[in-house]
Each structure stands twice: as C-alpha cells, then as structure tokens.
Figure: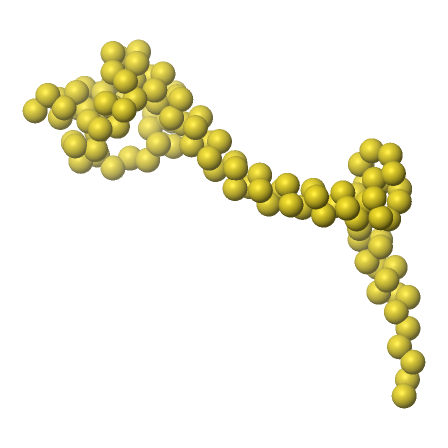
Length: 119
C-alpha cells in the first residue's frame, strides 16, 4: 500500500484560515487556534446578520412611510389599511422610495387611502 501524506492538505487548511483571519487584532490574526475560533465566530455572525439586514431595511422603510404619511395628516397604520382597502398592492420598499423621491405621487396615494377609509 502507498503511504498517504497529509502535509499539503493540512497546510492548505491552515493557510485558508489564516488568510480569512487577516486584519483581525492581535493573536486572532497570528495564532492558528485563536484565528480558527475568530473565523468561525465571524462566519456565524455574518450568517445571522444577513438575516437581520432584511428586518432592518423593513424597519427603515416603515419609518420613512410613517414620516411621509404623517406630513399629510395620516398615521402609518391608517395609511396601510387605506391603500389595502383601495386594492393597491405596493410593497413597503417601493412606498418608501415614492415617499422620498416623489412627494406629489405619495400625496395622491394618501388621498386614495383616505377616500377608501371614508367610504
């Protein structure tokens, strides 16, 4: 049988970990054990924060819609309820964009929402 040498793969694995740990503070970028732990933790945080990012953007959009709708004398919840009853299907991302970049268009949406609530 041929003897299997693991040196190349071991060094490749270590090199990869140390490369990923580049820029970390102190021993976390110099020593393998500390670097391994930090790289694993960074990966876990990156995974979690990719999920959190979606919620953070939704909060931002809601805050922008709320601010814009309150300028026209309507709360966020009444505005959303009104455009839902009016049958307008626009997501919060687009509504926030309209609120920021097209105030006149947003005012018309507020009027439509108000009319559907009154009816």
